[in-house]
Image (cartoon, rainbow, N blue to C red; front, side, top):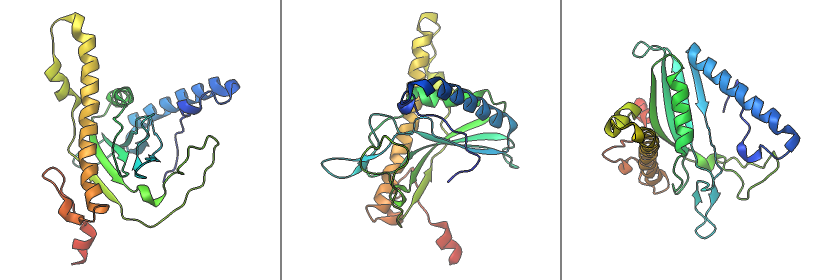
Length: 237
C-alpha cells in the first residue's frame, strides 16, 4: 500500500497521552516540511489523506458510509516527469467508495493541500477521483481506540474513476468584488465552492461505480460524464 511513509498523528488521538501531545505536534510539523521538500524536488508520487475518517455500517440498513464525524478526504499527489507535462504536480482527490456517500469534504483541509501545492514551484493539477476497493479490507464495524485492529482480507471487484481537472482560479474568478470589506468573506466562499465542486464530482463518479459493481450493471452503468471500461479485456481480444 505504501513505502517511504510520511506519517502524521491524527487529531483524534493527539491528546490520548497528554505528555506526548507536544511531541506529536512537532512531528506533524516536520512531516509537513518534508512533504513540501518532496513537492519542490519533483519526480515524486505522493498519496495524501489529510483527514482520513473511518467508515462504519449504518445501524439500521447495514450499509457502509463515510464517518460523518470526520469528513472522508484524500489526495493522490503525483509530482513526476513526462513529455507532456514535465514536473507537474497532479492531485487526485478521492473518497474510499463504500455503499452510500454522505459526508462532504472538509474545505479547510482541501485548501491547505492546495496552498501547499501552490508553493511547490511546479504547476499543479487537481483531479477528483473515486476509488472503490472497500470490501477488500474494510475496518472493523466498531470503533477501536487502541492501535492495532483485526482486518479481514477478501476477494472483491474494484473500480477507479478520474474526472477532469477542477481549477481553483476558474472558480474564484466568479467571486470577484472590488469592495475590500468583502474580500475575506468571498475567499471563504471560494474555498467552500471549490471543495464542494470536488466532492460533487467524486460523488457522481462514486454513484456510477456503485451501480456498476454493487448494482451488477457493469459497463452499462456508464453515464454522460463517467465512461467505464475494462482495458485489460480489450487487450486480450
